[in-house]
Length: 349
Image 1 (cartoon, rainbow, N blue to C red):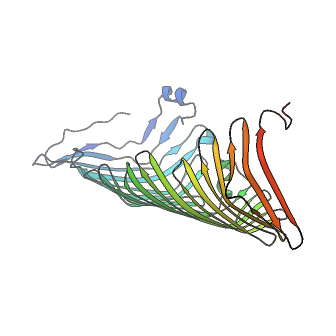
Image 2: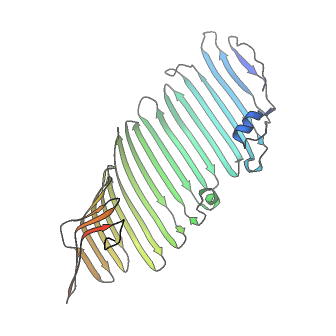
Image 3: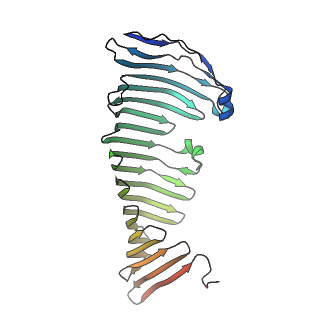
């Protein structure tokens, strides 16, 4: 690609001519394999630099192009893009710049992009996202807030997915049907971040498993290498064949080394409650402090204060696991103590 330019004079732009066509070098084609052999631009124009009498330098670039990429049909694309970049200064502490991008309905490979629009300011080491909107098929992503290179950042993210059917082929899970709405807020610096996530999942189906809805809230705090998080989840009407669970409620707190879990399950035939602490590591240790199960009117509960389960690479170990069922005329119990090898049968052969 050849171009000519004029030295910038005070108060003048350095202009570069329009480019109507550019051929991809053969070396790039052989290296990438699938790089299109030719790009056609309907218009490409850029104005690079404006020198003011005071010596102040202003970057002002406008770019419009509508490429029709040809070559391998699997990689055909059609982009309709308008870009504006303008600003002043090159010192990172003093730079003041703006960028606006607008993408009209386009296609990249086989993915249709309905809309891409963003307005961004860069002021004194702060990347201010005034707006960012991306619509692809049934998905929509929005961003706004401030990302700071030296101070506190404050970012908001929203992701909506109305249906996964149109992008199922790209995920490899073509039998999955679902929708979701995710909102996230991140505040602070990299060494001290606070994050909040709210997730709503709509009707979901995968093979013979179905779910009416899921609501989840997660709060996390990252300090250096330490992470602390807590979350609540509620799933409604989980069904697989004849098994139906009307409600599943989960509360968890973790620091990535251990986790406290409270679980409640409600349905017509099954009710259950579980409280445990899990210590993560090469050997996973589970301490059950409360376990209650009611199946078709038969109630079982943990009789000992705490039952312990250790899960190692070669064996499981269970201690003080005692369940008791009390009915009007009889008492039943289940007790488990011992080790189960993962490398041999129950008789140690």
